Length: 190
Image (cartoon, rainbow, N blue to C red):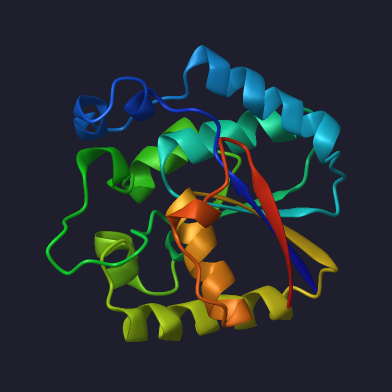
């Protein structure tokens, strides 16, 4: 199975660093919208494709733009929500990385299916989980991916999350230098 992790398009929270990181529920910028549109050419989709999306507005907007006109299966999952990389127990989740409430997602993105396997993960996300706890959830998520019986699954997520999963799957030691750019992507064989 091939997992293709795709970073969301440019969000408003990255335009005036570091102050903009304190923006709650940031949208995509105009540039982010253009980047998301370009995904249609890079990764053409069909109705058989499965897209797993982080429960933040910028990832949901990226997926909405990318999948426009294609009735593929879109699943929102906290297992691919923002994750700090590397982990630091003294850091806290920033306002820009707070998960949307399920009711808000249902209202704003009604054609997305919401995966709710563990309610506590929806409340806290995976951002600050210790490595052992993340590893347990990552294993559970990867088992779920296998159960979908797809040759390829696309995952619209965040740079730290992509790097955390990549490190977990490969066992290689990665750093922030391994982060992809906006709408950057990595393929992982699993």
